[in-house]
Length: 457
Ligand SMILES: Nc1ncnc2c1ncn2[C@@H]1O[C@H](COP(=O)(O)OP(=O)(O)OP(=O)(O)O)[C@@H](O)[C@H]1O
Image (tube, rainbow, N blue to C red; front, side):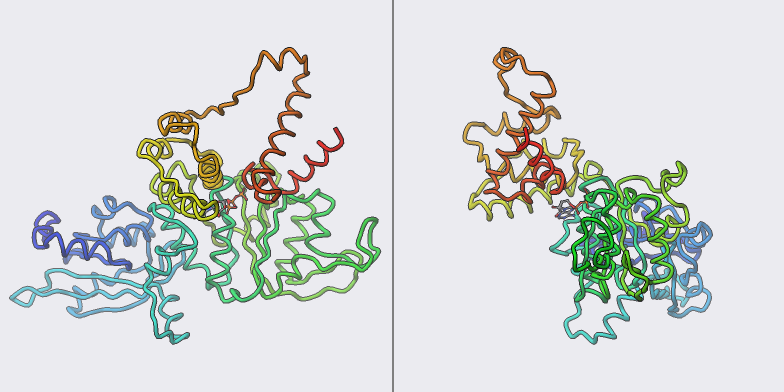
């Protein structure tokens, strides 16, 4: 048996670098199946850290259910290269090849195993692409989604693998972690990419309108309905993808109706007695823990199991500091272009960004960088700015004594500040309510409601 330490000595630093940077899983075992060397991709796809993996034996990994079969031992027994399918615990199937390496006496000394996702290879063969993009470029080097951290790379990797399967996907993660971005990514990497991607926020509609939005209605079916009738969003997503964000906000009665649609693939508009067959892929998302809501009786268990085919959890931004810097630099580039500025972040600012809690996740970071570029810091030194970033408190420079003199009630004061702040933000975004809503971290519908309320004040 070759010990890991002894084995490492065989390899120059350059070889190790090449080995580590291979985008596919690759690892080396001894004749008993002990893992001597592995790249981090192998650990990542097995949902382990590299350290954990290096202490493992392939037979144990199979026993623990990380994957269903190992060809490394077979290669030792049969003294030849063995190839076969391996299914991981997340359902992804790989084509794995184990190649024995012999010593001078012809005995097997080591086995090198490498693997590639089956779907990916088949996809390449089927589309007969001449320019084969390597997995790392397709997934890890994606320009649409920033994923520097190991956790986010794994999420993206899993998203990449589930995309072509047409399976229902449920995305969980705090608000602003990138669930909609990921849903769109899955759509774009699926067979439905050329069809519609319909994103619906179940929390953005008043309860009585969600059904009409989703199912559509025939003319005159309820007061307030457009006289000509309206197509629902299920129908609008025909052949494409329907993304139901904040699915936990769907009222229980509608949850039952959604389940029926998923089981029958049929939709009936409100006021109609004709059902229509539809074909769409569902991606749902929630920042709430749906399993917990099932326990509380607030989410239907049957719908939960119907949705929970392929769950993907996006970790909060504070748990992936590598992404903070990568995202900040991307957003800086975007907003420097947009506002024709050349702002750079100083080292202390970058440090402060990494330490902040980012409870609004990527959305908060994006808004923060946009404000940073807009304000251009004429009257701040980078030091004071860094201290503002790192303090979690909002710096409201309001003259309290002046306010006190006005004798406003707390309610009126809050409304007044809210009104002024909203007006100020909309002005900053040249009148764009959409951008202002993004910056303020509220839905557009909420912002419109507030503007109406303020107009009536
Ligand atoms: N990994 C990422 N790379 C680049 N941009 C990202 C990433 N994650 C999120 N964003 C950006 O952050 C913002 C929020 O993302 P998104 O709307 O997808 O979050 P969400 O989890 O769906 O939020 P909510 O639960 O509030 O609907 C968007 O502007 C999006 O473009």
